Length: 279
Figure 1 (spheres, rainbow, N blue to C red):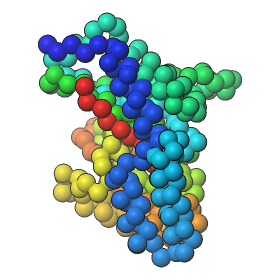
Figure 2 (tube, rainbow, N blue to C red; figure 1 turned 135 degrees about the vertical axis):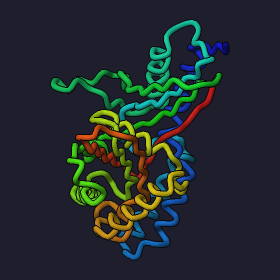
Figure 3 (spheres, one colour; figure 1 turned 30 degrees about the vertical axis):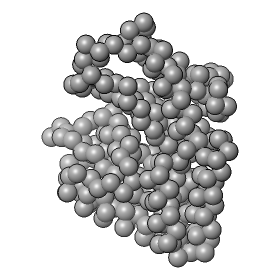
Figure 4 (cartoon, rainbow, N blue to C red; figure 1 turned 90 degrees about the vertical axis):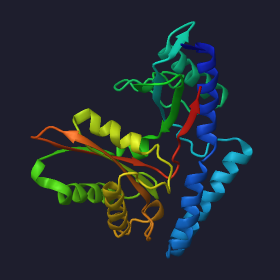
């Protein structure tokens, strides 16, 4: 049994939460550079260039790439040979976020649903925990902004809707979102499971690096088909028209009830923030 102290977890999450907000991933940078070559609109090209410049300034000057530093979503894989000592795992994760958002001067965006009173430290956090084999603790810190999250949708379709119905809903969701999620976007899709699981699948699909093919060849073909249809909408960078509305579509799928066809569409803005730490 391998022991990991809560202080180690706190320190790792603190550092990762700060870096995730300051450093746009190389995969996203490469996708934006490719989009710049593909985009035909002059306005679209200018926007994409500004996004790349913004990412460089954020990394070089150690400031957030976007003022909306999001709700802290954490995907956690806990190995069955790991023992968390000197405290509670959830409390350690939350303390790491609390310290990271304070020391990193990141905007606190969490508030009471009705009074709108801010909690002051960007907690509580949202944790999705998977128990896996092994002696490692793996944590993905995913700060998720409000603009793109507000445009996300979940549908409980009839099984007869099939692939055609799924495709229609996804493209419709992106088109209706327009400029609101700050395109170019990345579209996370969850198919199957049930009401809540489809949403988790959609968000989890966004952890995959851009440019990495889906290991399921059937889903890979679906992703490409969806991306082509989405980019035909003409929404374009920041919703001002163009060929690049989305940089990628990522799909995760699992079996579902015979009476259901759950579909979740989780839209991610161009500031695709997710950073992994392995302890």
